[in-house]
Structure formats: C-alpha cells, structure tokens
Image (tube, rainbow, N blue to C red; front, side):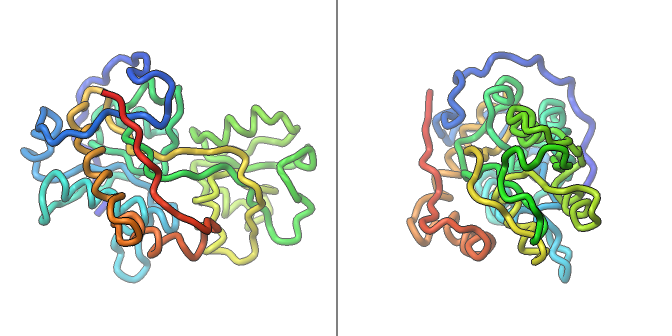
Length: 286
C-alpha cells in the first residue's frame, strides 16, 4: 500500500562523508538497538521509499495490486529483520530527484529505489553496503541509426531521469546530444514509443525492465560505467545503518540458495545477461 509520509522533523545539516569517498564501504553490522530502531518498533511498521515505475524492481502487480520486485524483496527482508515475521511496511513512492530530500527530512526510514551510491550523495545521506551492481546503458528503438554511445548522438534527444546519475554521465560525455529530462525512466519509455525522444540513458538493470515490457526496443552494449546500489538512510540513524548491513549479510548468505539469489532468479535472471550473478561482497569500516 502506498501512503503519504508522516510529518517530518527538521532536516539535518549536510556534512562530509564520514567514510571518505569509498562507495563500497559502510558501517560494520551490529544487532545493538538504538533510537532509530526504537522509533520503528514503537511505530509498529517500516516506512520505505520505493519506485513503482521500475518493472522487475518495484511495481504494482497488475492482477493483485501487490507491490513487488527485487528492491521490494529487500524492503521486506529489512522489515522482518527489525520487526519480526509479522512485519508491516508503508511504501512511499517519489521521483528520483526527491530521494535525498525525503530521506534527510525523515519522511522514510529507508530508501530502496535502485539508488546509486556516489561521493556527493555520501555527504548527504548514509548508505548500506552495496546490494547490486549495474551500469549506464543506452536504450533505442529497434531499427534506430544510433548504434553506440558516441558522436552519433549529436543533435539527437536523449531522455534521462531528473536527479539521476545518467544526467551527469550524459553531460560529461559531451557528445552534442540534446538532454531530454523526464521524471523517471518510464516516462522516457513513453516518449521513446511516441517518437518524442531518440534514446534513453539509464541503468542497464532498469533498461532490462523496459525491454521486458516493450519488444520493439533494444539495450545497447556495453555498460558505460559501474553503478553501485545501496539502501539509503538518514545519516543520524547510524544504528539503523548497522542493522540493515547485518540484515543484508544474512540476505546474501547461502550461496545459490541465499535470499538474494532466490530473488535474482525470480525477477532478473531472464532479462539480465550476467552469466555469473552473485551478490556483491560487503566492505566495512568501524
């Protein structure tokens, strides 16, 4: 169920990333309770920021209406790890450019929304350990003259989600493309289908979901960079960050039978071309 967020506390002041600029590193797990865990338990449910526009990652099942996907499985693992088997979750959906502000304002406990860990974002929010690796890829209609992420894009419209790392990748490439900003990659797909834009730049993981919905588009290889997904939280909630990292440790454990692999096979295996999928290895600092 998607609900509005409760009244938010005053946002905290941005500070330098306490872990330095290492997107792989996060706080070492602990089971110790703290104020953030107490807040969630007293409330009785977890508030999670998610995306309902990312098929395979977070979307509403067209038959049941249930919110499902790879990211949603992680939300439920976090909720049960804090609240037990009968855990409840309130899902809050928002655009990519709202994510940092909503986390900092306390509107959500966790943000599980294919959110890339970057050095800039590490100065504003806290991240868990990496739970998935992806990379930017170009999406075009089948039959498009665009064959690669190169000067062939000059003068062509490339749709990117506002507030996403794709905006920076396109700007830094300086290929002469026309930036076509949209609220999210699903809006970009609609524009591509209607001929309003020439290409989409987004994570390969999300592009796979677009291609699964529309057989008339194709995802161009190779990936242009490496993007690391983490669960984002308020930097004041260090006890929650450590607890989430412990939950993710259990989620990754078990090899082929781990919850991570079970979820990967259910949602992503048919649409991603990774021959040896495996959860990323966690890296910690105290």
